[in-house]
Amino acid sequence: MKIKHMIAAIAALSAGVAFAADTYKIDPNHTYPSFEADHGISVWRGKFKKSEGSVTLDRAAKTGSIDITIDTSSVDFGHDGMNAHAKKADILDAVQFPTATFKAKSIKFTGDVPTSADGEFTLRGVTKPLTLTINKFKCVENAQLKREVCGADASAVFNRGDFGVNIALPRFAPEVKLAIQVEAVKQ
Image (cartoon, rainbow, N blue to C red; front, side, top):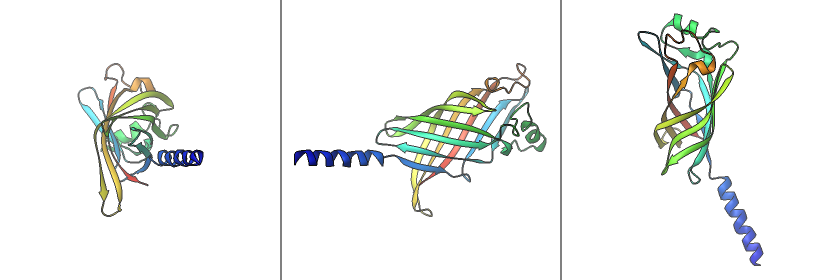
């Protein structure tokens, strides 16, 4: 009889662990990865208007994962000429590489709050490690959706030359700063 109770307890514990992680779908109407890059005598800022993906958080185990896809043809500097040039082969090459991705299998927590995500960033078909710093994180119950919605502000810096974006190097600095506003709805 004790073995039956032990098996039942292990099964119940395992079931609890399996369902401890929550999945959140990125809200494309509230998520805009943005960036800034040196343009010689000024800094140009832009954003991507189309992105999708999901985030999984296991608050009990203090871990999670991220899977985000960005439509590179949705780049927007607020300047039509620059938008068209950025889609060409010497920058994003949006025809050959229509998406950029960030995939993380590890989210680090400080206390109960996620503070960084170690993952892989793919741009122009090149994949490199990238750590996103999560500067702000908050979840609330959304009254309209009647579900939890989480939001974050994340940032990172990468070297564009590592991804084959060599236009105007070394005249323009190679560092690109990312600033990502994201909201996601619990599924």
